[in-house]
Amino acid sequence: MKPIHFSLRTVLLAAALLLLIPGVTVLAQEIITSAEPGYVSPEAAFAPNPADPDYIDPALNAADPNVTYYYTFVAGSTLRPRDSTADWHIDSSGGCLYTNASGEIFNVDLQLPDGATIEYLRLYYYDTSASDSRAWVTSYDGAGNYDDLITVASTGDTGYGNTLSSSPSVVVDTLSNSYLLNWRSYTAGNTSQLCGLRVFYSTNP
Amino acid sequence: MKLKRWQFILSFALLAGLLISAAGSALANNTAPAAAPALVRSENSVLAPHPFYYLFVPGTALRPRESGAPWADDGSGGCIYSTTSAGVVFNVDVQLPEGAGIDYLRIFYNDTSASDSIAWVTSYNGAGGYDDLVNVSSTGSSGFGTSLSDFTRVIVHNANVPLVLNWRPNVAGSTMQLCGLRIAYHMPDYYTYLPSILR
Image (cartoon, rainbow over all chains, first blue to last red; front, side, top):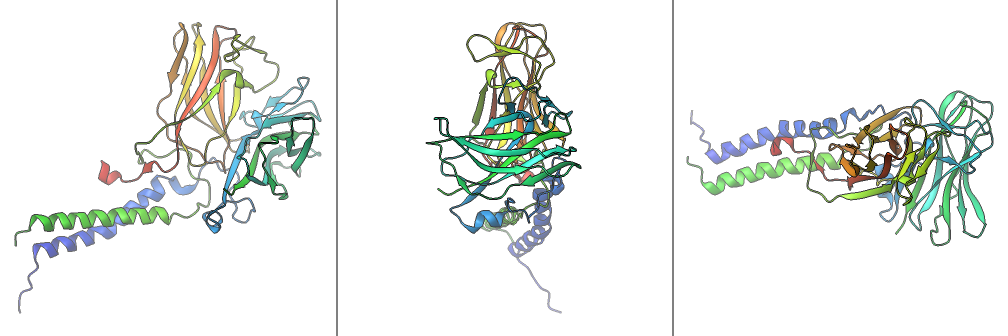
């Protein structure tokens, strides 16, 4: 039988290719699993649902290269009452807010890029009350005029939950208006808590 | 057969190129996660050289998390202190770009007290869960000063969790004032994942 001879170059190239396949597999696992451990974080109380209209997946941001979607997410405990007469309290986590002054409005400044479009407002709450709380975005023109742009209410009385507003597609005009996130509880006490407000918006430069 | 130098270099370059391109493909094909990504990068990731961006909040922009704890400013309007409660927590909303990485938290203070105050960043999940992500304390008692936290690897995920800056004076009165909190962060995509090559 005629012996087969391989050059050292051929052997080296073959060895390189043989090393490549398992090497890539190991490297890919390093990238996906070590950098993002299991893609399961205890932080995610409400798993992102691709069926939600305010869900950002790569396809959404790739659909139109001129449009990009973002979130602004505000913890409930960063809102403060509009009037000093109201009290405010937090839950044990420090992230959810409630008041004993039923009907009091809490707010926080909302800064978005000029020209951005507010698509949705999502309300995160704790609600074991028969009444529902409400959140909304208001614009002010600095001359005593305002516009309530988008609103959403909590639902049910089973505890933690979140609800999504309708989509009014409001365009942000920072030259003419300032914007606030508002929340009002119609129940005194900790049975109605604000845990977060998330604005889903898009920019189109 | 003796291997020529250029042949060796070519083979090595080919192998390295294929490995790097494969890594890039794996990143590019990384589809949307079914659940939230981790907030803190693993030690396995390596931070590439990058410019810092800063979010600098004056102390007086913070307010107590609960009513009933009065506060005052230092006269300049920039530093804040709790007048009666040592344990009250002050907080303020933080908005950072999606995917940005928080590297450090710096506290600016006026501390003439024997105790030290502490500041930290917390994430909340909207359902009563939280994570305290990075913290830093004031030090000493000689007046105005600043302290820097340890390096951290917190990644901003605005879809899942809001971020909040907190401060607890641990002392009531003007001997412990918060004058500012500054987050040093980097924009997304400054992490690389080539541990086998870089180590």
